[in-house]
Image (cartoon, rainbow, N blue to C red):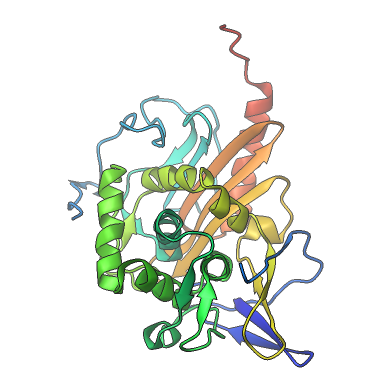
Length: 331
């Protein structure tokens, strides 16, 4: 996929990577409706095993961000010829689950890992903060911003766009080092945060999700992470952008970033964004949020054959249910 476009003397230089985390290809799209321009100055536990893989106890979570798995029948029914390995659709505001498939099955998560990275950066680096570009960041493989200038200090907002839109693994490393000094120390902090949020499926092994070994989650936990991200105004604005044009210390002075989210790319109404991911082991992954008619729905898909098509089908049915469901008039 296209990770970044840097303007160099009027010519566009494309930084291509092998997919979101290391496979596939893609191109930038024209006529994008959502453009954001920014002033650049500015110890996890092993989950229990079940018949279909590791499981966690189901039921309402102990914190407001957890979705409610206690109901026995989901109100929305959707069938797929080739379903995702795991999936979840839920009300972002109430936590009600509308549709599920293996919601507590533990699976690799690829670059949706970066949701936690963004949450920790948002907590610990102020909007005016700077991020130094290190050799380790520049040498990181997979999907990258790709034009990060070694030794320069870049605004944290720009780096967060680089993390969440083109899924920059190089941005993830630089941001992790800014917060904790080393990526190893940052990963410890990621897992401490996961434990504090009671994300019992989840273990992080890197700030990027580039490697699958030791890096896993379930759709139940990702729903909580999605709700947490949307509660952060700075991050909610970033993940909703289809394209960002940023001042940048390179020839031409501009950095163009494009979002991998298929719902944003295809103009699905009300899309609030969030994050995609892909590795061979994780398959195609999506954490998405959409608002229509005053309702906000979230969708999580892990190892899906087509994240865009399956998310749209779920959301179409989900919003149809929300529009026709009886209203609770209890005062």
